[in-house]
Amino acid sequence: MQTNVILSLGSNIGNREFNINRAITAISSDPQNMLVNTSNFYETSPVGNVEQKNFINVAINVATNYEPEKLLAKIHQIEADLHRTRDIHWGPRTIDIDIVFWGDQTISDSDLVVPHPEAFNRLFVLVPSLEVLPADFNLNDTIKQRITELSASDQSIKLIKQNKRGDQEIMQSVRTILANIGEDPDRAGLLETPDRVQRMYAEIFSTTGQEKFQDYKLFDSENPDSSKMIMMRNIPFYSMCEHHMMPFFGKAHVAYIPTNGKIIGLSKIPRLVDFVTHKLGLQEKVTDDIATQLNKILNPQGVAVVVDARHMCVEMRGVKKTDSSTRTFSFSGLFKEDSNLQAEFLNSIGDLNDQNL
Image (tube, rainbow, N blue to C red):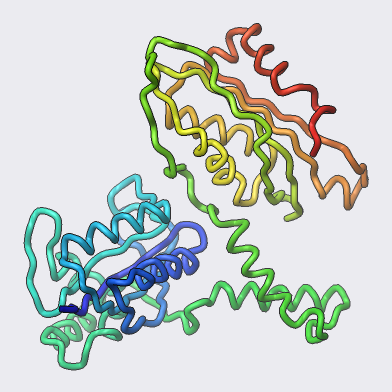
């Protein structure tokens, strides 16, 4: 038997609307759930004493076949899949999904309390929820009264008229750029360009604002006393320079020496490179960030990272030096202390001229 559940979603890291829309898609694509309706999107002030960016909040009404504990587990998995980040209570987060109401039921156990215990203290929960609740919901009058009371507090909430406001603003900006370089945004070849650009930006800047890589698993090697170097080389990447918003691309070479046999799945190292490069940046920062993330995750005895890249801001504009390449380095721990180990790593990846970028 299906139950109508009200979920509150919020984000204030990275592309907030994009994060929320991905979460809604993940929830509604589950065959055990059916999306009934979605509220307007709202920009809301953060609560707590943490200085941070405003949130985007939305509420959805979902008809679900799941029991409460099962849906909660599914929500936690979706948050993990979308790289939920929240290092401190009431702090910034990429995505936050809460069960606010479960039909007209009251639930109280160690993992789930419904109605949500903070619901009646938060405008960003009540205002969107009221839009998606059925007209005969037994708490509607209480919700309306609390909205009136909280509207006099320091909490702010502002309607975003279009659910994809960010997308629309990017598209309009692309039209403006096209017009100002002398093009006609309405000619046949350019009519769909603004939409293509905003969808491209959502993909290539998908980790903007995210500081912690979470898409990994750690393992214990069979020989924990072994201190052999683990290396993956020639990992391709593409990124965008923060100075001119032009591409730079190339290959990353990554090595580390485990501590007590603690290792990371090899497939996660390319994902880490993607995580670091899917945002505006610089090659130097990409190199340092890969090393920093690995050190945080593994606490290894040493990390070595070399990045080879070509920069379109050098080749297409300014000095126009085609086929030029840049190599950057980051060494820590044993790789920084032991020149022989460092040389072994560098010899194994080859000279910059050997790289086919």
